[in-house]
Length: 210
Image 1 (cartoon, helix red, strand yellow):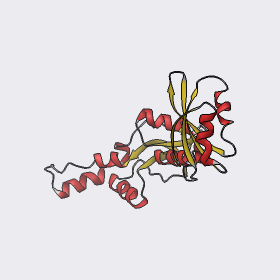
Image 2 (cartoon, helix red, strand yellow; image 1 turned 90 degrees about the vertical axis):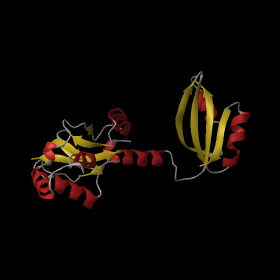
Image 3 (cartoon, helix red, strand yellow; image 1 turned 90 degrees about the horizontal axis):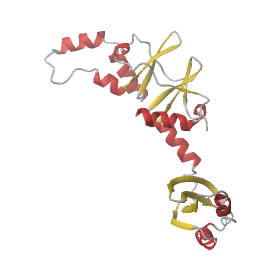
């Protein structure tokens, strides 16, 4: 899975001299939460709905409505945007983008091809990919099993699954001497998978409908 396969392509952008009030209106109209700030094709910064809301005067201000509107009309996104921008390349693995967002505590990343902005990848996009890869919408049986943390253990465990098919495998935890895996199995004989695993000597921890 690459970033370019899950990103929103050709994102809506704003110029650095765009008034904050106009940017807020755009976010509301388009349903976005962030806007890349671009000038002459070059990415300068990123402004989010939170950045724009934080730029608004406090309700406790003593300024008049006229004064607030005047100040806001002069305030541009260049003055409130985040810079430098944390970005990710379009051909990077999706997990790199996910790790960057988790480490930096941010909800989205501009996606670049060299110096050109080509997309936006967000936490929502990563969740879509997670759901797709694990086959969460395809039903079946979800089986959690602890296998020995030794070479060949996964292949041995998989031999007990047929005639059902393994739709996905995810590592849920690393335990002392074991790996905890979550299998999603579908197809013929799926109900008997837990018993076949136990008969093969595997430690079945949890079984539930997918």
